Length: 409
Image (cartoon, rainbow, N blue to C red):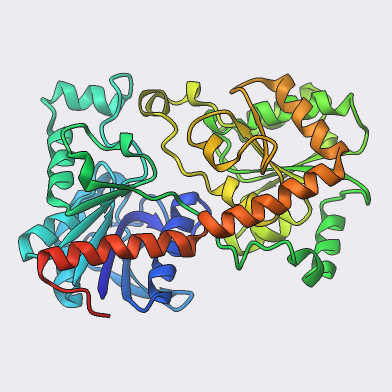
C-alpha cells in the first residue's frame, strides 16, 4: 500500500520517544513491503516564516520525509501544505499521529475519500486540571469537538490503551497495540561485538571495572521518576560500594535532579550523560546490569485520569538488551514485566523498595541473568517493533479494504 504517515511537529531524527516511535513504525511498515511517506519536522519549535509557505523534502535512513517545520502548537496552520502533500502522493490510506492542534491528515483523507487511521499515544481529552482543558471549556469546547471529529473520521484508532479515546467513540473501533523495541538494534550480543567501543565508553564515563550499574533512560520529568532513581541510588550507596547509576536523557528537572544528587552525597556515583543519538543508546545500556523505570502516575493528571496509557520505550529496550527490569507496579507495566520473571515491581514512589530491588538484582547475578534472558525472549515474542508493525499493518489493510481502496502492495 501507499501509506502517508502524518506526524506533525515530530522531529526526525530526534531524541525523544515520539521521534523513535515514528521512525520505527515507518521503517517497519516499509520493511513489510509498503511505500511509506512521512510528514514530520526537522526540529521542534520555531523555524521562521518560510515553513508556513513551503515544505522541504529529505530522507532519514533512506526513508522519504516531507518536512513541515511549523511548531506543534500551530500545526493547524499547515493544513494547506499537507493537503498538497496528500494530493501529490496519492495514498491508499492516511495514518495521522494525534495531537491537539493537528488533524490535517484526517481532514484531507475525509475530503478526498481516502481511508484514515488515527494513532493516539496520549489522552485525547485532557482532565479538568490541565490548562488546555480549562481554556477549551472557557471557549465552549472547540478543541474537544475537533478531537471527536477526528476520532469519528478515522476508520480505526490505534493506541496503547483504549482509555485514551473519548467514551463517545465505540470501543470496537479502537485497537490496542503496544509500542516495542528494535530487537535487532538492542541486542545482548553487542557486549561482545562492540567490546572495544564499550571499553572506550566505560573509560570516558570513568566507570571503574567491576562497577555494578543501574541504568535510567528517559526524560527528566516528574512522572518518569528520575528523582526517585537518585534517592534510591543514595540508599544503595550504604548497601554496596560498587553501585553506580547511569542516567541517559534530559529534561526540565535535570538540574534539580543533579542538585539532589549532590545534596545526598551520591553525585560521584552517578553519570549524567544527557541526550544521546538513538543509535548509541544500546551501547550505553550494554554497560548496565539492571534497567530502572520508576514511573509515577500521581505526578501526571492525564495518567491519573486514564491509567498508564504510555507504552514506555525504555522498558522494552531494557528487555531487548537482556536486562532485568525494575518498574512500578502499575497496569499495564505489570503485564509486561511480570514479578520475578522479567524483573521486579515496586510501588510508585517507594524509594526504599526501589533501592532494595536494585540491591537484590545487583547482588544476585544468576537471578538477574535469568530474568534478563526471559525479558529478551518476551520482548522478541511480544513487544518488538516488527510485531507492532505486523499488527498495525492488519489494521491499515482492513481500513483500506472496508473503504474499497484495496490493500495492494
